[in-house]
Image (cartoon, rainbow, N blue to C red; front, side, top):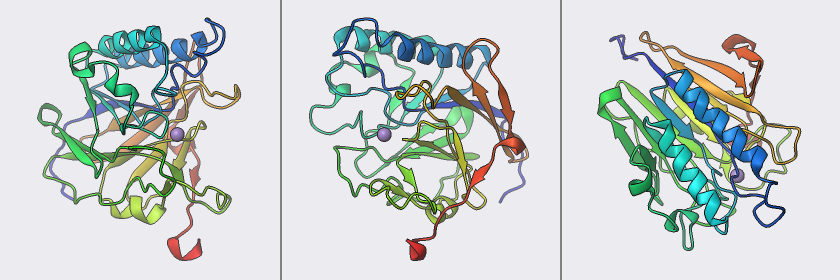
Length: 268
Ligand SMILES: [Mn+2]
């Protein structure tokens, strides 16, 4: 690792927003999900974040109603700073994608959608930062979020985003979208933003810091409710703070966030 000073940056990481999950039901059922995402947007503005990452399942499905698309576009634009979306299994970018229903680049020019089937890197020279992600393109159970991740580039900060199941000793029933601790450790990234789990969880990843932000509001009603503030410090340290969304929410500092150990490929 280089000892050259890096720019100090603040990132807000969220995932599993599931906008439109209740669009087929009563008209006001989705208000909680929308309110939770607005809280994340407010947080990014209040924290004066340099970048926002949405690690998949921003939309719940491709048939969400028009008003949900309009809400999403206006809130994404309101962030008014670089925002990266790594598509998940619910908002994949394959045929009939929800992202084909509106012109994201036109409605919210601050947003970068990582559409690459084999992964792609978005570059932010002003932040001296790059972020790689591989989009879900349809519901393929054997999709591997970190397959083919290239070596880090020459930017001071190199991040990745992935949407799937981290494999740990109690997760053997998770049969899809595998993420292995050794893949994260070998990624060479400073931070890996994970999505797919509703519960905020930091995972073991060698020298890489990797975490699920958890859902902004869980669909089941009892998980979720957090966003992560990722502090990239000039000495290379990556510090996490879990922020409970809403008035007077609790704050969990880096060292108090437990780390979930993974299983190696040979133990699976
Ligand atoms: Mn998911």
